[in-house]
Length: 180
Image 1: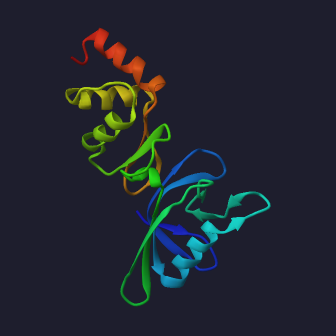
Image 2 (image 1 turned 120 degrees about the vertical axis):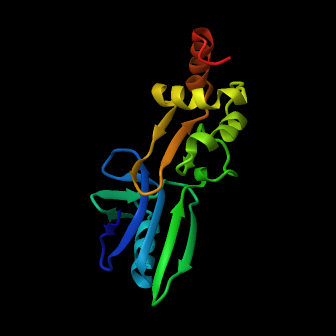
């Protein structure tokens, strides 16, 4: 699905994931492509600092207004395409395996249920067994410890790493015999 990125120089997005429902959602993942100057203009508008308000700028992607999370150093990867086109991907550091724990992390990709567990086991103070991976994914989603991040394109999930979120899930699963 392609979504138009509004601006003086429009370009397109094939992946956008944002957290939050307010008038201005926080960017988790954004893939832009189009004419080089249009992609650069969208990124410049997005990252523009508004010192008086202490916020970054925002852009319209389809029907959403998105902005960067305050105080977060996003990673940007760019690749030139043919005939003056540019592809640029911006992503939140909590999509990385090297980000510090902040009470949650983002898991990207279609195999998230298979790949989330090592980071959860490393960052969450609740002890887990590897054999619980599948059950914890389902229980975490049902109890709100794992939530789907809104948008289009690549799937992204927000996974809590707090004791408060996981301790009751594990306790109840052990009592009910859902994990062993």
